Amino acid sequence: MPDDYSKHLEKRIKEMRERMVKSKLDGATSIYAVDIDNDIDIDVVGSAWQDNEIAVWYNNGGNPPVWMKYTIKSDFEFAHEVYCHDLDMDGDIDILGTSSDNHQIAWWRNDGANPISWTEQIICNDFFGAKSVRVADIDNDGLLDIIGAAILDDKIIWWRNLGGDPIIWGEHLIDDDFDGAHRAEVCDLDYDGDLDIVGAAYFDQEISWWRNDGGEPIIWTKQVITTNFKGACIGLPVDIDYDGDIDVVGTAQQGNDVALFRNDGGNPFVWTKIIIDPFFQGAWPGFVNDIDGDGDIDILAGASWADKLAWWESDLNQKPYTPERPSGPISGRPNIEYNYSSSTIDPQDDNLFYLFNWGDGNDSGWIGPFNSGETCEATYYWGSQGNYEIKVKARDIYESESDWSDSLVVSMPKNKSLNVLNPWIFRLIQQFPILESLL
Image (cartoon, rainbow, N blue to C red; front, side, top):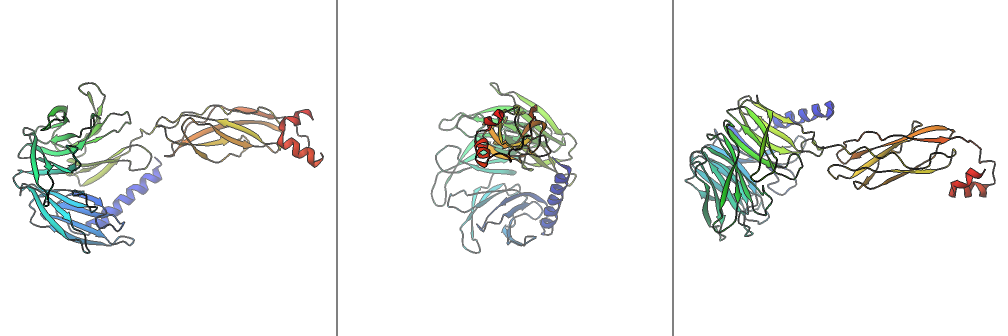
């Protein structure tokens, strides 16, 4: 990634951070960015353990944006996490939160209106040290369920949505011996059509996953991803290397680690630890996404003991393979157009653009897009006699460029002026260039 782009991105992150900290939120523990009020602008929802609150900042537009804070819940002791999802599937984004000292998971239903009205429902109030909450349809019944982790209970639990108004929740245990359960994430890790769970245990120093084996009640089979990951805080499932297997990115607060656990397949899965940063003090919050828009997954994390936010760029977006040497006539005459073609393949099967260099200081400009493997054709004529080396390269949709192809040498040995010919002969030669060889 170019240095100037990196500096620009870092500057933008710093500016966004400075604009947000002007609004007081003591002991901020988590944030979630989403359009809460359906006005197209992205709002921010946050939790704070010192302020003991869940709050939303409505984005009222402007440059910089104007923020209006609204407290969703106060006296939410040691508010640890917020999560946003349309839990009741009514078209409005709802808010969920965990209180580590109230031992609660709560849901605030977005009832619409302007200003928005919120209805609170306590999902549980005896989930000791509640840390994490997520939403997913665990049992594939079309209703969204809730998944949580509690650090003092050492539990990961899911609450089945039984319907009703208010919704009735049925509690189901996934694991009650996951010492210091800190985070639970949901994904179909083994691609069998059932949603599985990835969890991080602070005191067990462990990241594990639980395979959903179906059944009524659901049977869960635990498989350890890593141990001795000191103060494990999170495990984020993502196919970071695009090999078709779900990998896991983890942070460890006590170990100051940010690491990738690569899924190498097998039964059970084999995991390879790749250290991203072993000195990231108090590594805790994390996020995975294509931050720089280059087609691969990057890692963003916060160092809770160093007041630091950093991201690591992935360069896994492979450039297109070198295109074939251009095909087309290797000799001709000036001022006559000739067609040339080439093709290549992109490792990620991305669409491609092609650039032909005509060897005389001119090029075709980027032509495309074309499907990976599809042939690209370009037309050109040279204005004077000489030998020219034509070459071509490809670029994917994320602007990753291939190497130049081998050159095709084209000779324009004759420079017989066609302007002296009868105009109808000139037009005929333009339509049928082979006739020029007879002159």
